[in-house]
Amino acid sequence: MSNSKSKSRICAVIPFYNEEKFIRNVVLETLKFVDLVIAVNDGSNDDAENLINYIKNVIILSSTQHRGKGYALQLGFIESLKRNIDIVITLDGDNQHNPEFIPSFITAIDKYDIVVGNRLGNLKKMPFLRIMSNKISSMLLSLKTKQKIFDSQCGFRAYRNDVLSRIKTSSEGFIAESEILILASRLNYKIGFVDIPTVYENESSKINPKEVIVDFLKILFR
Image (cartoon, rainbow, N blue to C red; front, side, top):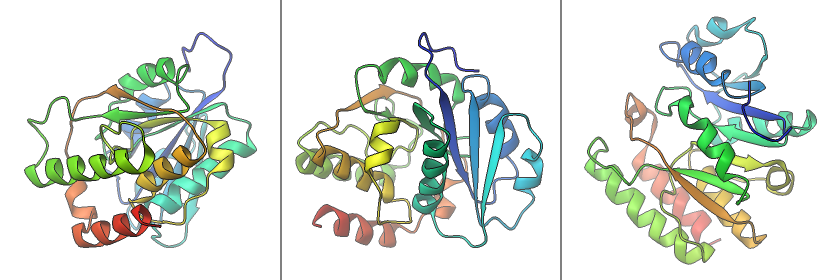
């Protein structure tokens, strides 16, 4: 349950694809800090969805095919708007984002419209290629958005519902999270950051670097 000082309704949107190893624990830990979890199954072919069925205050949305993280996030955002949620927390279902940091996002959203996790304060556990791609993409997004972007690739975030009601991404993959920052900046939304630790489990197996680079350049110069 949310421990926010205000009466805001807070939910978490958790997209997942073949995360039967982690999803149940991520959902249960997240529920300690939010009122509702919207878990979005992006076409998984494992037993992940069955592991979180029937958990109280959990809504499961399922895609019949694997469309991508951006598409799954949009499904979750639409559902949150239908339910008049005030603040939406997004985090991954693969145990990379520690739900214990959710209160930090809830506190920070008082001053911003979007709050993004910043993992670049401690790079010891981040692979070198990820460090370089993140720093370059963050620098380019800082120029594009005219706001300081510390960690463009982090999916651990908080959004005000007003942002989600006005923004719809065209990207269905991982790059949708960068596209959100660009679209938000055009509407003069303020983007803030909170420091979080770097955790890596199995993310690398789900990202096609060449595909992500091409998609990033498309949204950057659109």
